Image 1 (tube, rainbow, N blue to C red):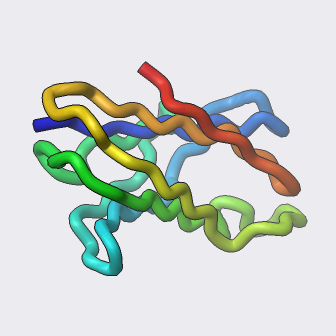
Image 2: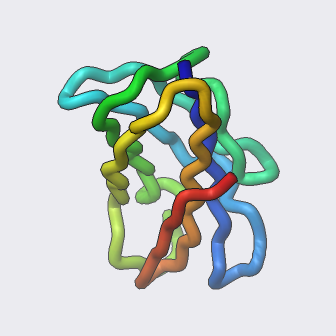
Length: 104
């Protein structure tokens, strides 16, 4: 079975984005929730995940409170194809844009 982690970096401030709630879903079923730590990382959604389609939802509205921004939440849909691999989904975030990629 595979493992999953994420890392959120605020590119506008040049630092990790702490305190963002992250939800792992498969379809509409919530599999786990975590909050990014002081280093912007979240790892403890579930122990393992099986091959299939998943979604990470980042609730950024609270993170951007007091700052002008465009986003309330950001959702990343991804596919786990291989068992026994680690999947890392980084999110590079700013108030008016974001990007993501498959990390290591």
